[in-house]
Structures are given as structure tokens and as C-alpha cells.
Length: 369
Ligand SMILES: Nc1nc2c(ncn2[C@@H]2O[C@H](COP(=O)(O)OP(=O)(O)O)[C@@H](O)[C@H]2O)c(=O)[nH]1
Ligand SMILES: [Mg+2]
Ligand SMILES: [Zn+2]
View 1: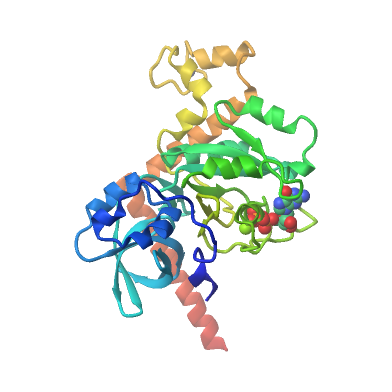
View 2: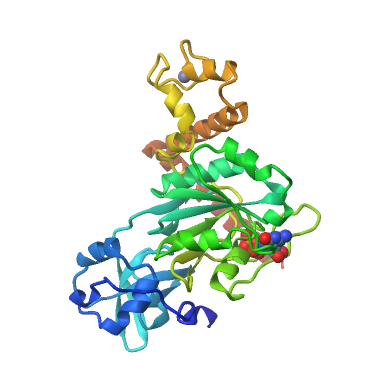
């Protein structure tokens, strides 16, 4: 099983001086692997609340009914008695070759999306940075803005990576920087090598980053470049529409040899907002103007005394930014409404009706055969 040796193959572990794992009864020769997985003082604090003779590990992969947990002495396939997400620091019990995840420690951050039915799903946890990847040959600023909102909502900070910079038209990166206010934009290419050292440096000494972005953006290729090995399968982009095939099928945690942890993800078709202060942070220039609006709850959609509209009319606000902001604001309103208990019950009722209909369909089809 390939996933079983996920991080133990990555060779050199970063310098781990200064960790005090021994206080928790973990053998000192276990320190390097755990530190390489991102164990730091914050994890240490979270772990202090774990009682019993459990061993620490980090969830590297989640599959149906099982997960892969990275332990100090290697990866193991484990059963879990609690819901886990990639990136979780967990307490596991070992009995012979069997490993059971029993505790998930408090998450410092979670990258969350809504599934199409509005339910929240944790894509990755305990991350320090979200790499919002966008391929230079089919850049969508609106998509990037959406992902920046989701990244801020996670409780961490986004960094935009313009991938395939070898294919970028002149001025593309500068234009994007002008549009996206308050985020770093780094051009990267696995063909020319541009930017990979900057990305690697941003992961040191042991930060955890998650790669977000459409399928075919070059996430797995970039991860391979950072790992210094072809660990992940990468895909040819269909030539017709340049959309990526889903070569990456599961989220996966990987240790970067020079220090840092990467979580690769498959492309997500519909990344719905989960809610939080991400919108305000992603559109900080609009938020700053909003302080001058007459109404505290102004939506900047034509209310009298709206400072945002005034700025837009005076040409001091990018109309594309305004359009993105309004679209995401409306979507967020819709999602928030879905969160109230009555809305929730209605969604569950609909789902039952649909699954019943599906069962009936398959039964009838089976009968006819
Ligand atoms: N020109 C160019 N192509 C790239 C680069 N990085 C990846 N690709 C290609 O883009 C396609 C999709 O890459 P992949 O890493 O699988 O994307 P993912 O779906 O985001 O993981 C593959 O055919 C890669 O060879 C790059 O920096 N420049
Ligand atoms: Mg991939
Ligand atoms: Zn306003």
C-alpha cells in the first residue's frame, strides 16, 4: 500500500532542536519525525489535554471507512472512532498491528467548504497558510477571490500562486497584484523553476500549507517539485477546454524534505462559502469604505449615503472587485439562511425524498433485468 510509507520515505528531517516532547513520555528518537510532520508548541499545547496512553499522530489521508495516520515510526492504516480530517493531530491506540484513532485534538484552523447540499466539510485542518493556485493560462480572478475568502475563513492567510508562469502573458501577474489587494502573489512554474524556492522558504521551518485550486492548475506538479520526487500522479490537461482531469482523487498530507508540510487536494468544482469574516478580509478596501456608509448594515447596493457606491462612481474602486464582492455577499446570505434550523430540516427532508426515489429507481431497474 503506497500510502503506508508516505512520509517515511522523504529522507532528511528538519532540525528539531527546541522541542520538548520527552515531557510527554515520547522517546527522544521519535522527535524528528513528529516535528517533520508539523509538531510545534501549538500542537504541544493541544496534546497536553490528551489523557490515557495514546500515541500522537497526524492524519495523512482519509478514505471511506479508514484513514492513514502518520506516526513517529511510519504511516499506518487506521480505524477511527471519531470523524477525522487530513491534518488533524490525533491520539491513537495501538494494539499489535492495529491502530485506532480515539481522540482528535483541538484544531488551530480548518479549511471548510460546503458540499452541494450545504453541509460543512472540513477539507484540511491545522494549516498555517492556504496556497490559492491559479494557472496562468486560464486565470480567473473571480475564482481566486472566492478562494481567498474561503482561505481567510479558515483562520489562516492566503498566498496566491500563479502556476505555469512559463505560459503567462506579459503583465498578467502585475495586473493580478493590482486587483487583489492585501495578498501576496507569487508566480511559479515547474517548467522554468520560477518561484519554487520562495514557496519552499515560506513552508520553513515546519508550516503546514494546503494547495487549493482547480483541477489541472498544477498543484500536484508543484508538490512533486517541492518534494524533489515524482510522488504524486499528475495529469494531462484535456486539450479541448484546458480543464483538468481529476488525477488527484484524495487529499493527502506530505512532508517536504527541507521543512514543512503540504496538503494536496483534488480540484473542487463548486467551492461554496462556509461563512466567517473572510469576505471582509478579502475585500478590505470595500470594508474600509463601508465604515463611512450612512447605515451600519449597508450592502452597497443603492442605499442612500453609501460610501462604497460613491467611491465606485468616482472611479476609485475597481468595478470587477465590486461585482465579485456583491456576488459572494449574496451567496453568503443564501448559505447563512440555510444554516437556520428550519432551513436545515427542509434540506434533510428533500434529501430523504431524493434517496427514496433513487432506491425505487434502482429497484425497478433491477426487477426488469
Ligand atoms: N507549462 C506548464 N505546465 C505545467 C506546469 N505545472 C504543471 N503543468 C501541467 O499541467 C497539467 C496538470 O498538472 P497537475 O499537477 O496534475 O495539476 P493538479 O490537477 O492541479 O494537480 C499536467 O499536464 C502538468 O504537466 C508548469 O509549471 N508549466
Ligand atoms: Mg493533482
Ligand atoms: Zn454602502
